[in-house]
Amino acid sequence: MTESETHQAIEATFRIERARLVAGLARLTRSIDLAEELAQDALLAALVEWPKTGVPSKPGAWLMAVAKRRAIDALRRRAMRDRKHAEIALTQNEAADGALEIEAFLDDDIGDDLLGLIFTACDPMLAAAARAALTLRLVAGLTTHEIARAFLTSEATIAQRLVRAKKAIAKAGLTFEPPRGAQRTARLPSVLEVIYLIFNEGYAATSGEELTRPIVAGEAQRLGRLLAALMPGESEVHGLLALMELQASRLMARTAPDGNPIPITNQDRARWDRLLIEGGLQSLVRAERLAAEKSGVAGEGGFGPYLLQAEIAACHARASRAEETDWARIAALYDRLREVTPSPVVELNRAIAHSMVFGPEAGLRLIDAIAADPALRAYAPLPAARGDFMMRAGRRAEAQSQFRAAADLTRNAREKAFLLARAAALDAVG
Image (cartoon, rainbow, N blue to C red; front, side, top):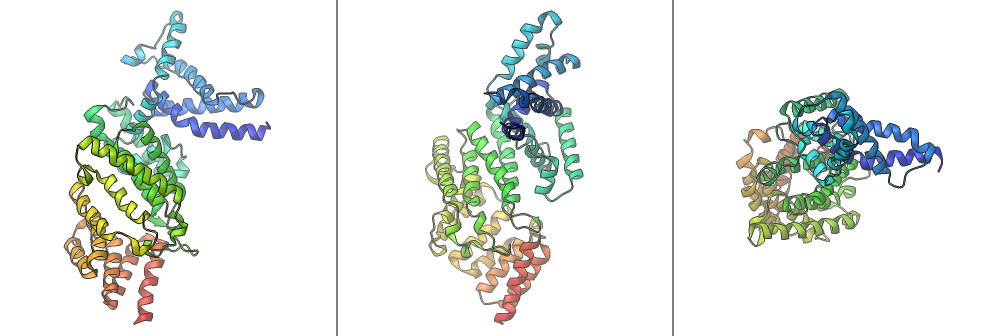
């Protein structure tokens, strides 16, 4: 293996193993910064040793062994006095036994380590933006530059979010242990919220020149798969994974060659990713079964919000043509979703679904009922939906005004161009 190939192998291994290293080390040292520093030290050691000795048969284990030894040294130097570290703050004479104890501690179920890291990064005491940045940094392994690019903000802003989040975690004395029982149930929605927030930023970018950022959406899907493997008995975890896989199946069909958006009703469904659809539907079946077992309720009565949204996405995925979409079921699912998780955005999407079943005037009535909500005051999809309803109702001048209002509100260049084009097209028709 050439030196270049060795370096590529080292980088690939580190990307795969980084979250595991940081998770185990953070639980041991109770410090995110120290855990990241120790993981980076292990990488540097590999860059020195592997070109000379070759890539070991178990590279991940090699990295962990190096990180463990350095963790022991760091803990001795710091002379930590809390309970866990008192067990491993050894005298020189106890070094051999102590090293074995630390190895046993770090060799605990790695699933617990990763879960502890995920739940800590997504702790609800942190702002949503900070949770997303910290999760992408610690679990997905993205650099500060990559996170800043994902959310179209400056590296300095992301760096500050990370620093503040780490300080808040340290001040709160979080132990990086995965929560159990009722505490896990209470905190799981925060984890799912962060992963879906990351996915949505990739699926429909809130600002910038591109409509979508598939790499960001892909990171969220990877986090969703990891969480599903770590928490196989949680219906909402599988529901979120199903939702992301089904929505991601449409990513390549969402944009025209010029980069502008294509509405779902006009997309070339041959471009939808069938493998993602099949995987999403399999996750959906598992989520449905788990929800029924947990609630003892047949049908959608025991479904949570992510499972309900996955059911909606499945209605689109199962329709080979737009005309075959079961809008009546989608409308009924939104009726149920508004009961489970009421929000202005859910109400807006419900209005769109009802307009497809009962006509544009029905949609307009539902939109008028929520238009005054402060959360929707600067929300571009609201006037965009109203414009679509008005256009379908033959009210072209009013529709044109709504499309222009939506264009003024959006911060995404592609979406703005699309909305202005819709308004201009009504000029041509008129």
